[in-house]
Image 1: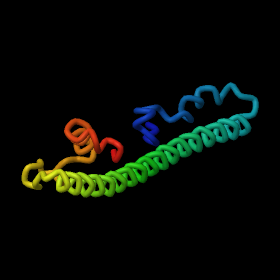
Image 2: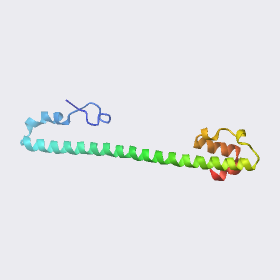
Image 3: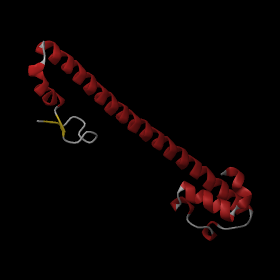
Image 4: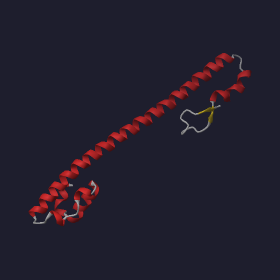
Length: 124
């Protein structure tokens, strides 16, 4: 019999109760021994459940942070494009003379501004 609970962390582990059964005949009070082993196993199972829940929560928090970053970058990208287009227009540069800014990622847009429009670095 195998313990498949949280098998990715504890692959193919034999059921811990089976590992203690060979000790049972030598115990003076087998029921008390089994109670203690059962309590210990319950603690281990609870720890595993707590670890799994903590991992789920960490993944959920990471996803929330990823989504917040994506929203921030999308908003910042739109603002940077507007600033860049307005500045280019004041410099007499046509929109068609610029690369397709909306197709760039936020990071690429920042690099483009840093490289080609150093006077707009303060807006990055």
